[in-house]
Image (cartoon, rainbow, N blue to C red):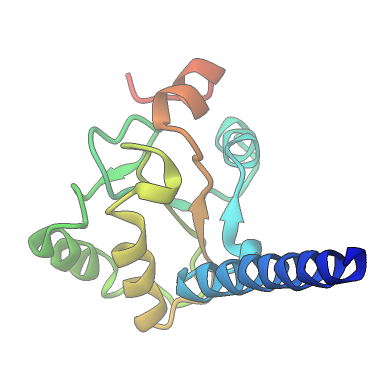
Length: 150
């Protein structure tokens, strides 16, 4: 009788592990960026604060464009703003350093980052990154004292 429960426990455990791995794999497959294409706020802030560093094109694809010298495209969940982004980058070299950010809400729920990042993939950009803002722009950028527009 004891062996029967152990076997049942083992089956349930294996099912749980399998389901977790499948969910993780499925989530990773849905994102249009790779882990290497995520840029930490600390790294971008260091670049923006270094006058000797080659500056990337920083584009806000959400509200307000608070990051220093960033270009405001508006929320790219809206088709007209996605078209505006495409027009903005039309003549940009494919190897240009581009950083996209939003920060309107927790990263996992953001409606703007996926359409914009997918667009840059479709346009065949080679050096584009997504600013990794897990909470929001206030908590992960402004409250950290990183450079902002005045």
